[in-house]
Image 1 (cartoon, rainbow, N blue to C red):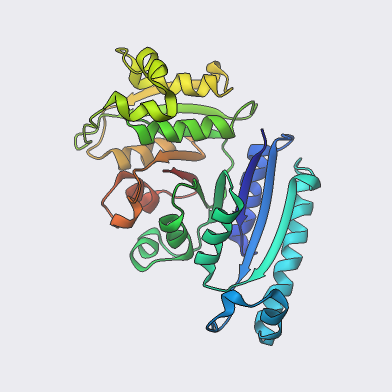
Image 2: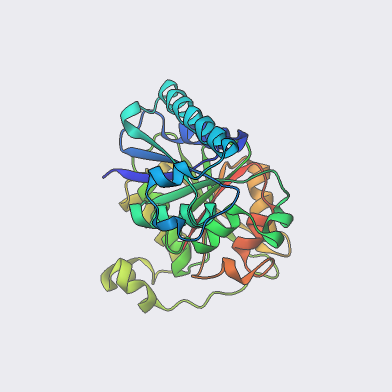
Length: 310
């Protein structure tokens, strides 16, 4: 089954980081389809523009916006060529440049939901992580409004193909693993470490087996979630059933630190993980800074990709 990924780009160096990350992860794999989308902002949104056709919108823009539109087109052509040189074939990549109609972030969210994508990729711009979460940004707005579409945030130049997956036995933690299993099926490059943090202020997650029935069936839950070692066994089983090799799955428990979010970021830095995969409860990001583990990790992590799965 092909994986369909929407890549939101603006033609900046941050977009180049996305291209590098994708080529490291998916080179020579034929089941990936990438759609690069650039939404060009306009100086002033006109009332009713969302109902205008593309020709009318183009006729309404000024010379500066037209310059940005042309530059975005050039970047898209170069992006396709770069990916081709790095092992992602031209037929696996499509590109689209559009003028903003209802705001860049909202336009990206609309396209992601309309296209039924398996994931949405965005790059993080050069403001600090605290400024981004306090003042807002396109990436933060997209993350908040993405709903159940997994969002991959690429921060900096990421080379490592090692994935760090914090687990706590919850449904959203297992859904994150399930998404990872689907994306990495038959991937020869990746390596996964399941991390359980027993930090002093880590919350105990109450587990209700019935919450898992809808996605994994009662029979699966009875077999894999009611074992003494289910914390690691269940996500490992999801990965293996999804086609990921068992010998590339590792388990790690840490008792260091006061907060699990800091330990996750610290572990990623120490052991050279390129991607952190986090499950979140619906609506958690909108609760704001320092309210959830996922928000804290996003705020602290640097030079790493962060996948947020709801």
